[in-house]
Image (cartoon, rainbow, N blue to C red; front, side):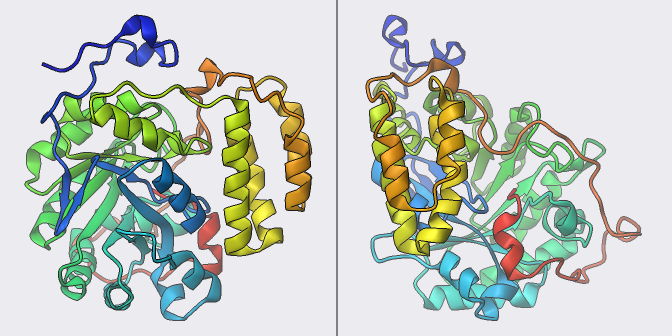
Amino acid sequence: MASSPQSSGRSHVSETNREVALAHAGEFEALALGPLRIWPPVVLAPMAGVTNYPFRALCREFGAGLYVSEMITARGYLNNNRRTVLLASSREDERPRSVQIYSSDPRDAGEMVARLVEDGVDHVDLNLGCPVRKVTAHGGGAAIPVKPKLLAHLVGAMVRNAGRVPVTIKVRKGIDAELLTYRDAGRVAEEEGASAIGLHARTAAQLYSGEADWEAIADLKSRCSIPVLGNGDIWESLDALRMMRATGCDGVIVGRGCLGRPWLFRELAQVFDGREPQLPPNLGEVRAVMLDHARRLVEFFGEPTALQQMRKWTAWYTKGFRNSAALRERLHQVTRLGELEALLAGVDASEPFPASALRAHRGKSGRTQKVSLPQGYLDDRDDATPPCEAFDAAEAESLEGG
């Protein structure tokens, strides 16, 4: 039997998870991706402008799992675009090293995989969930699974060039409620030799709104022999246990829940090991993490770019704390690391983490959309012609992921 929750001692856990039992010994297995064994079975979702090396390294120091790069455009990488190559880069301490590829051209995708394998990558993922209008309107991202033969050519080219390096794909449920594509994507992934499929349990039309459809994850799991990873609404560590129990999936993908909360990976490791999740940090501890993150960004990108990026991070780190709106307004004006350090020196270090922020949405949420597809795109779903790339590498960081 799973360990009984200690409700009286779970004031730092939301009501949603107050009665969720901890994992018991042997309840869950390590996630198997080719030769890799990932424990706990937790994956950091690739997020544009977020999961660069500094943030991946910070998350890794808190916990364990697989930490995937932000979406890297194959065309930009093959053209040696300076920023694209930087975003795809790593350091010796990052093992296993994981890179997510964006491409709608099998030749480009295959060639990029071959180069990454030569460079020592341990895992590659294919982005098939990007819902951005500029991408889907040209037949890319979440539109690709609409054409199963094109999808097969993409996955097949990557697998053939990967050797022993596992290839996975990440998809959404489909375009909208009337055009679901995840079942075809699961079938193609299996047939073409992918090691796993991740499902963000929303459609492209939903973007990040509403609740994720965990029943779709369970449905995909019932149809696939390869591992299925569930993505959507992992806000707290105990959500991961609930998802795996409810769907039977083989692992979870954590996205917006870790924005401004890299310690979530520590809590995930604890609950999968059958231990109560640690108390979330007070404001003083959050400040230390925020400054550590800023220094890592400065070392990687240089001070001007790093401080510009920190604007969104300061909003996520301080969400829910008292007077945080006024603090954020000042934090968004800083252009030097020293200014950031000076502003944060005055916060109340003893202020506890706000319960209201446990399930607060950070990053994109709220709206829905009508998905744009190329004219006549649905007329021949057996067409395997690669669509035209919709953007160059310099734009990739601003795009939403899957």
